[in-house]
Length: 407
Image 1: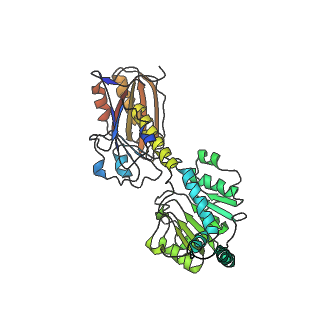
Image 2: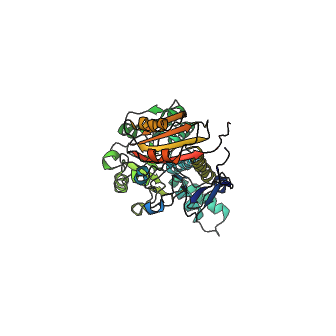
Image 3: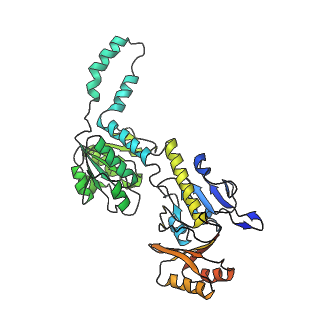
């Protein structure tokens, strides 16, 4: 679209960044239309990774926040929703990176590969090659294990990552069972038909030799893996957690390991209670730590911010509905309001009273939030915008101007 010009100057969008973000993502913001950096005084949007965002950092000028990653527990969602600020994440952008680490984790858990490597590295370098070979042959049985083929993999959470892990299990020659109480149509299409859907989590646990968790942290999932739930696990099974630490009770995991209910616990979240144990493998939260994943997340987050700032469209928001409307006019208003009956009719009545024609509109809601995109044939006056903003239930309003690419 042609940038909006005010008094001959191009109107700039200001993006404040936190953390180090991939240049390939930041390059998505054209320099003639976007000001991007960590020292932006009055940002229109925030772009971050792991930074723990405080409410005081969300200034009045902020209209959107994008997290280059899947989890948004570092962002005060309730505050953002109350102020009508959509929060974007990047589901699936790091899915392959996590899947590959889960593959490594399953292989490491199937045999004592880590112990075998440590044993080999600990030998005296002055030993002769012949003696070393003889020692390795003598001791290798200490590190034997079992193959993954023929075992059963249970996947809890069948979204972007979980569906890839399910396919991975099939590629390993495993039987795969899965559970997801909120499986979307899109996720169902991604899921291999060979994956058996389970009706509940306990039944999945009782069937599985390996269980891989791929769930967000919600009130319903916090400490989902607790002492009672662990009694449903097949004795001697292996639990892999590359989702979130809060999904498991660490105390319950230790007790299950001590009792032999779990043979091994592999997680991307070290905890002091688990250190020094030979039946745990702990990694320093490296599931998405690949150059490709960081690039993918940054690019997706940048594209989502651009779609919102330029057109008011919303993709992959965790607190707003998914909504996109192709531009047909130069003048668009977007309105966030409380999801209450009659709101849209009140807004349209005010527009009609002002003599403006609505060229196109789209309205969607999720939970307590409703969001409207309204295209007008003429520019709305500030007096009209003020009337809409003053309606009880309206949270915020944006006016977006510029020539759509299609014209």
